[in-house]
Image (cartoon, rainbow, N blue to C red; front, side, top):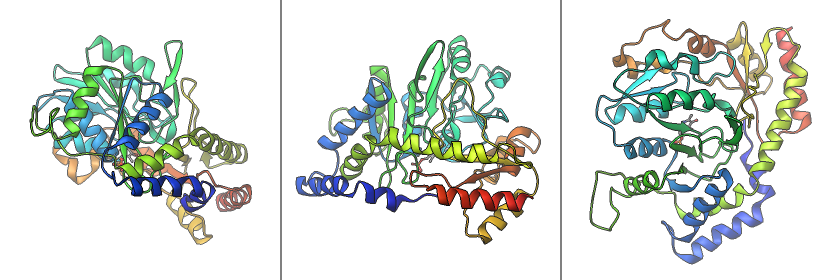
Length: 368
Ligand SMILES: *Cc1c(COP(=O)(O)O)cnc(C)c1O
C-alpha cells in the first residue's frame, strides 16, 4: 500500500544529517527543532499558531480539552472514520453524536447536521477523510448560527484546500482547531509517532499548549488537569525536511489518482472517487466503491500480489465499544453501505506507472 523505504532513500542524505544533528545537540525533548517545525507547519497551512504533540489522537483530545467542555456535552461527528476521533470524545465523558455521510465524498453530510443539534451540542468535529475536505462553508454557517466550536480532524488531509465563501484555504485552518497525525503512512509521515494542532486564536493556542504540558504554564504550577503529549525533536527534524517535499508528494499522489481515474472511470462494477467542487483532493487513499463482491475482488487481487485495504469495514456506531451510545443497524445507511463497498488501492509517492498498470489490468480482469 505504501513504500516508505524508497521515499526515504530519495532524501536520505538530508534526513540522516538532521537526525545526526539532533543526536549531537543532546536535546531530544522539546528544543529548537520542535519550535522550528511548528513554525513551518503554521506557515505552510497559513494558521497563526501550531503546536507539536505526541500523535494525531492526542491532538484531537487536547483540542477538545482546550474547549473547556462539561461531561455530557455533545460532539457531532461521523461514524465512518478511524476510531481515534470518537474514542477521545468518549474518554473525556463527552457524548459522540453521529451524522450519516455523504455517499459521494464519504465525509459527514452537512445537510443533516441541524437535525442532531440539541441544547447540549457544543462541538462539530468533521473528519476530512481520504484526502478530501468536508463541506466547510456550509458547516461553518451552521456552527456560527448555533454558536458551536469546530475541530477539524485533518489526519488524512494535510495540504488539502477547501473553499470557504469565496476564499480557498488549507483544511485545519477553518475551524477553531485543526489536528494532524504524522503516523508513518500519512501524507506527511515521520519515523515513529507524531501529531500537531493548529489554531488561529491565541487563547486557543495557549490553552492547548498548557494542556499538552501537564496543565502547566509555569513549571511545577498546574492550572488545569493536563496530559503529557510531545512531538520529539528527532521526529520534528525529520518532519521539517519532509514538509519541504509535501507539495511534490501531493502532486505525485494526484498524478497516480488521475491514472487510476482514466483507466477505471468506464469500468463496470466500480465507481471512482468523487471530486467535490469545494475541495482539492490530496489522495491519502484512493478509494473505489465496488458495487458487488468487494471481498472476493480483494482476495483475487491479493492472490496476484496486489495489496488493497478496507477503510473501514465496520462503522463506529455498530462497534461493541460504542454500543452504549444506543445506535443500531440502519441508523446511518450511507456509512453502513460504504463499509460494504469501499476498497482502497495502493497509493503513495513512489508508485510507478508499471506498478499501476499491473494493478489496473488485474483489477479489470477480475471484474470481467
Ligand atoms: C490516523 C488518524 C488519527 C490518529 O492518528 P494517530 O497519529 O495514529 O494517533 C485520527 N483520525 C484519523 C481520521 C486518522 O486517520
